[in-house]
Amino acid sequence: MGESLRERAQREHPDFPWLDPARPDGVGAWLASAGWLDPGERFLGCERAGEGNMNLTLRVRTDRRRFVLKQARPWVEKYDGIAAPWERSLVEQRFYQFVAELPEVASRMPRLLAADPAAKILMLEDLPGARDLSAVYAGGAAPTAAELEELAAYLGALHAGSAGRSDRTLANRAMRELNHEHLFVVPLDPENGMTLDAFEPGLEAAAHELARDPAVRAAVDAAARRYLADGPCLVHGDFFPGSWLRTEAGIRVIDPEFGFYGDPELDVGVALAHLALAELPSELAGRFLDAYRKGRAARPLDAGWVARFAGVEVVRRLAGVAQLPIPNSRDRRVPLLRRAGRALVAGDVLALWSAP
Image 1 (tube, rainbow, N blue to C red):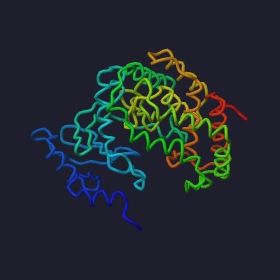
Image 2: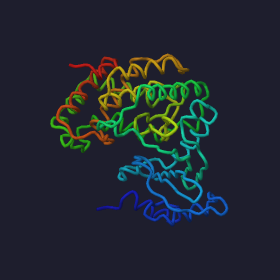
Image 3: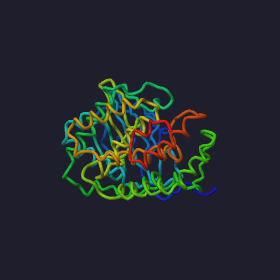
Image 4: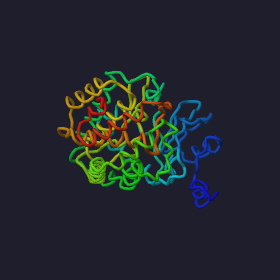
């Protein structure tokens, strides 16, 4: 076995403050050295905060408060064989600073309390009772219509409030290139190394069939070009149930490290894709779209691009690396993968819910 990305980075940067939940004393020592503890405040401990894919996220307890630390490393935290841009924490920091000027957006996100660019660490508000909505894929509590309307309002305010205010620090090119690979390339690569039939019999053959369809490939390639091009407004970039928190204060949105100036259809399409992946009814998708359109959207949505981005997201979640906590199945993934192909080609997002 060769040296892992984690091992190499830690060897090459021995003085970098690599936070480790297994070594809480080191976390407490770093907080004290950074001046992030108030005079007399005592560090009590920390634990992982959720199952974050991209970054190490810790919930910290002191004798006075709780907060979240989020550290970016030069690998994907959940898949540490995949390299990731180390500077993504700087983009996320700038995202929080940018939206602080948009009350309708900032009020639906945790507050950024402090940042250390050299250590690639953000200190964020801890939201009481927070749990993401990832359980929805396995039949857990689905977002209510009211929660989906809140999420749509968040997107509308983000897109409209950022339109015409392009910020070069939010281009996020490196993260876009990484995500481009996993959105548009890996899922349709027959040699991607995925053993898809472990999730559902016949899924691998269905994915290969989709990859051979020239109309699907053309639609995916068009969406890929659109994704890499700059757009009119700031997008969240990863707007799915893993980034949606149900808290004591209501629904909240986290993890904007994939944010960039792009097309609003990306965020809307990704959200609708996950409603389909969670097997939620199309009526909820309609409620979400209606709420977005009634809000202060950046511009009218292009339905075709919404459908293409939604279809691509379904394909990547069923045939790519970033699998969701969907239970192993027999007749769930394959039909949805085929419907995603139809949505891509037809430019109709409701095809995700339509029978063949």
